[in-house]
Image 1 (cartoon, rainbow, N blue to C red):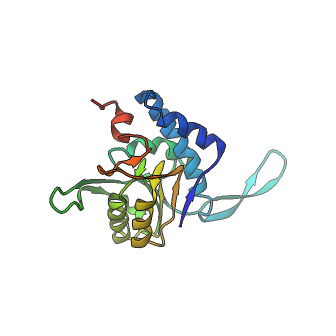
Image 2 (tube, one colour):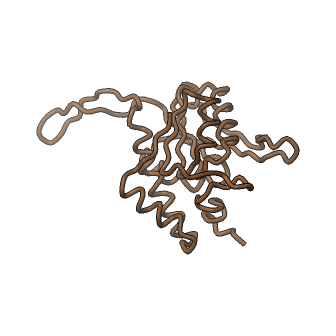
Length: 207
């Protein structure tokens, strides 16, 4: 299952973040804002519990989140989305996954993996600005399931049909939330029209 967040505020910010003239400072700010909007939708079905809260006038029946949340950025570009989610759910724990692509097999290889204990049985939110080929996302979901994650959700800014199809075939139980489903992948496996290299644009390392 996937959902494209077509809210006018999201689409407005997406138009600015795509612009080649948008510098790395503004790009980071927009990535944070877009992530917050998309994550807001991605978390609409998480488990809550009823609590009594004393207001200045009476007892109010309220609801609070009743699940351990673990945010998992895929290094390095996923770090650029982390602030947006932590502003929304500041009590969330954070895990990290680092992957690179083997030049011979073209498959993702894990070079770093660190998850908090709350991953087991918790709700894990995988974040990466670009879900392109889907290889890194699938590998990260594999690691989280092996670690005992109770539920996994993927949040990205831009994706494409090819990547969505591969992730959904490998993990049909994992919903994907995105601000845009773009046209295609080019011969270099970049999303078109996309954002360019999200990591370079986030951290100002573009040559």
